[in-house]
Image (tube, rainbow, N blue to C red; front, side):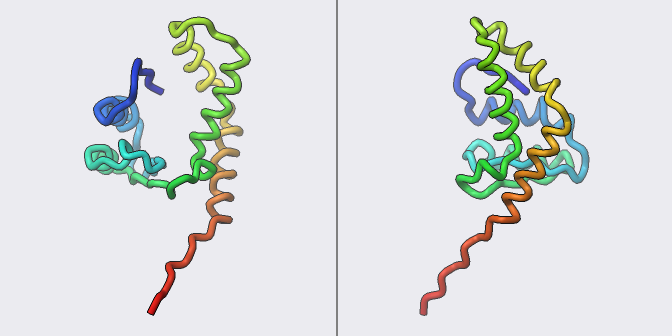
Length: 129
């Protein structure tokens, strides 16, 4: 996790990829991302490939296929219950919530997303003569 004040742009996202994500990647890892234009940049793709991992982009409008969406929904639910008052309180609490998320929950979110992916049948291209 990386916190940033203000909007996340391509420069900020690439910094996250290089400083936070790439050092934790191992050869053969798969990095699942949605289709946000920042995620599809050549620099992001190259940084992930150079680490020996594979960037995988989900179909458009498919948050149910992305386990990170389920993680953030859980974290946001737990954050709302804490009623934090300041930005300074957020980062340490966010790190604690993330670190305390049971592996069983994370595993379940991956299973759920995989099951949704298996149920999703892409539409066949139309053939017009």
